[in-house]
Image 1 (cartoon, rainbow, N blue to C red):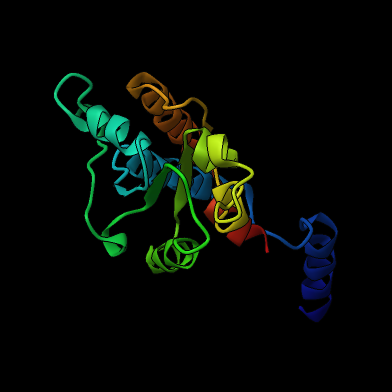
Image 2: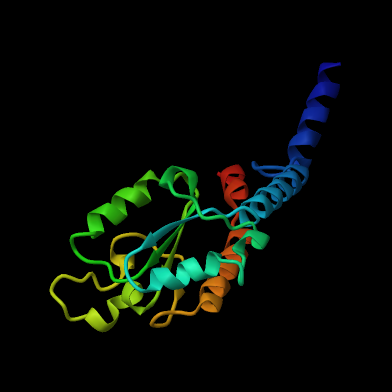
Length: 178
């Protein structure tokens, strides 16, 4: 009996896969990732951080003509309720700590869209002493929307690109493989 157990144990050790998750576990986790990402990309809640004239185009995007609600995108007034921040306009040195504070109050996962040439790199006021040359120096930016000011269609395209980026994230699979 003992020799039979030893033989079975040695046979299992030879055929057992290397340490790590099984294929069925990886399949379940990948489907779970897809489900979570589908829910996230279909319910993005951006917070408006309008600093200048680009904010008017951002409001225009939320109005009836473009209707972001049909994509599941609803503007929220509080950073604790939102998962996307749209920085629209010129970011000054005095406003930079407030931007960082609001970003830190957002729950994970969070994304940032930089809207307009002023938010992207300082824009027309690039050489001013009081302007931050791009909001990516303060917070990590995921999508850049160019233009001065960018059109509502440009912002919609940026939001749709962010939805594609969200669909490709693999948070649970990375956790499983650790």
